[in-house]
Image (cartoon, rainbow, N blue to C red; front, top):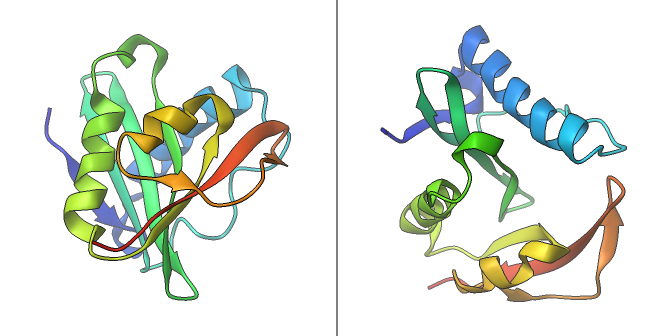
Length: 143
């Protein structure tokens, strides 16, 4: 599977649809998040979308963007039938290859705290609720 990376302002309508489709399936349907997914960030030129896909569509996805000069990672989602094959790990490693020289922040779902720690992220505060799910603020210092 090829890794695809696209800036928010370069996405096609089809790509936006496919991205929102996987995020809707994972966050709205499966995890029953209680906050809107569309937040005004996806189409910004400072937002990069990374994903892997097969003939059925996107299998694993994440986005990264800068906010007030700080790189953030979020919306990490993998299709149910594609889990357990290292696809999300491949995407996180791609982020670290491209932007690992910068400080990177993310809000990890609490049950994934140790998974992100494997990439060098460390806790950066108390747990908090977002979209009805417990999260851990995490940071990876610039390398």
